[in-house]
Amino acid sequence: MTSTIPSGADAAHRPVRSFVLRQGRMSPAQQRALDTLLPRLGIAYAPAPLDFANTFGRNAPVILEIGFGMGETTAAIAAAQPQNDFVGLEVHGPGVGALLNRVDAAGLANVRVIQHDAVDVIEHMIPAASLEGIHVYFPDPWPKKRHHKRRLLQPAFVHALAQRLSAGGYLHAATDWDDYAQEILATFSAEPLLANTAADFSERPAWRPQTKFETRGLKLGHGVRDLVFRRR
Image (cartoon, rainbow, N blue to C red; front, side):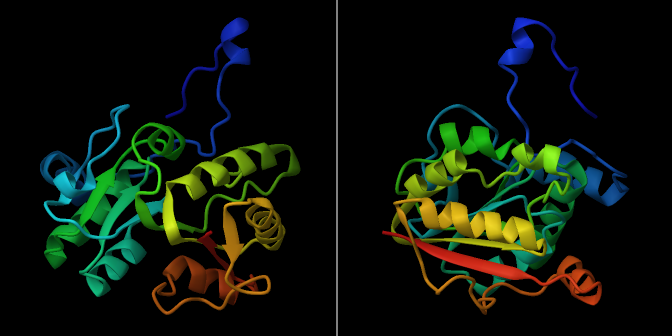
């Protein structure tokens, strides 16, 4: 479902979205998860800073994942790192339902989900210097040049992400589109609050499992690039 495009003065103030809400087919299991699990494992969007200790019932490092897709990577990383808490952002219902089911099946207590636009959540809900890490894996590359303005990792948004990292916290992105990888590298490198952990691109860190999506891309000859920067 897409929103109605406003006209006149309203159109001038309409934000450029980095996503199109293509819901796809919602399976019965995913719908049940949205109905029964989201009230327990979800965080409702509200323009107020989150208290992560209250949200998770403990004080632990918090890692944010933006655009978790169907949630297989999120669930795998959270299961491997029970000492950390994870907040996943995703707008697409089937993906939210899929992650909720994975979390419930694995009995994970360290994952919460926000079904809302990441730009709004970062601006209004994530306190400064509150995150140990941020994951942005395979964001929509918007391959047509006229759509590049819709790419998520633009300078202003990257600056906002860097501000939400604690000192030494990391920002980890991955993409299989070479031109987007080069653009992300340039954007991250130009952000004064961030420092690269490698000369340019990084090796895939052990904590990031190779996804089915990534495997398909590799089979098609797409080179996957990882970028890991730390907050100065």
